[in-house]
Length: 409
Image (cartoon, rainbow, N blue to C red; front, side):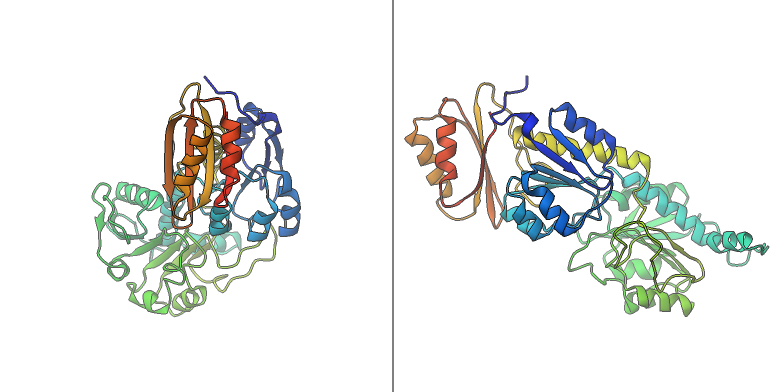
């Protein structure tokens, strides 16, 4: 049975931007929250104004949640990125402000993997060029340079949720699958791990990238890496636009060493739908360019709506941070009849001592207490069985080490 909350649910304000799927809106409204849904992204100035009384912010990939926005969001409890990537959020600043950020690491896996396999076939058959020619009134029927993908090797760089699914689908196509990841991963089916990125580049007929944006992955595919690829091999990037040096890829295609490319992400992308896009890859032979649509299927967006809204609702209702990308993760079970206090504090010595002293001074008994830390903050969930939780909450919030303190029920 749901516990009564100390802060009325109908006063919790949710702001959703960028056409978040209706299932998320329905889920929040079913909880009794106030929901405002906006179709597009907004500027930093407008967002900084809007978030001042918002408790939960939902975004997709175009909205930038900067340090300035977070500083204005004094009531912010959590941010939900209704996508995989979270590089559009100032994660460290959110962490130090006591704001967990949740994303959807699973929901668009299949959509991206299917697109990648479709592009492998399209590149192998030069279908993009043939289709354009017919549209232009030219008829060029030929088999030269066109191949089945069966028996060829696909090399996956980054063997996470999407990369491993690409491997499963590629194997079903009869392809050989090799992969490289900086962490040890359990291979799916007959997929085979290789020790180095260079090994994948040298062996694969198709190299597909599925890595996050980090200092380690930025510009990881440049002239040297492209030169290591097999002559005529193709490169696919549906990960992050900063991973590939676009000018170097364009040069490698013009020179004939790289046989084609499929690119869905770019170093600089328009902030809204427009006709103003340009890239050195435009109009090159056997190059597929798509506008960051890897996860843009109705199925994926609905699944993302379910996944992220569920995580946010659980956090608001119980304090559980499982799945947060920038926060200590804890999810203690609810204790019937207890009063739950949530506290985010600076990770310095003596904090738990001071908190427990506050509890003792009010003659409260701790029913359950879970603390998890990262280098900057500690996150504490504490259940009390005495009806003095408001006094305890005020005492904990007054500690100089406290960042954010909330009582749930």
